[in-house]
Image 1: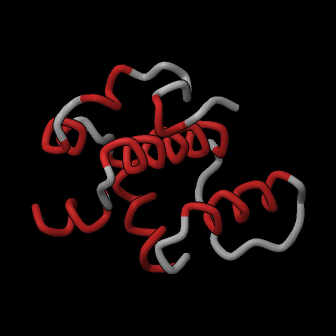
Image 2: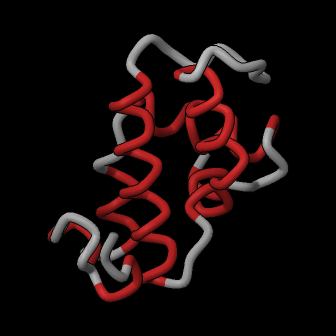
Length: 98
């Protein structure tokens, strides 16, 4: 896997947009993932990713996130890459806008 902070994570051009633009472009399911990260996973992307992977592997998991685990994992990686590149906490910023 490439260096997320330098934008090699899929070459997503959205990683360089202003935070307001990035947040405005979030899909509803991505906002749900941000909420879940804070409410159920103590703000940890690693824990939510681990839970999704446990679900795929038929191991115990905390929360039934969705039937589209691949989509959720891709969204998490994108949001995590944005947070690292821009040095922001999307969850906190989304809460401020609410």
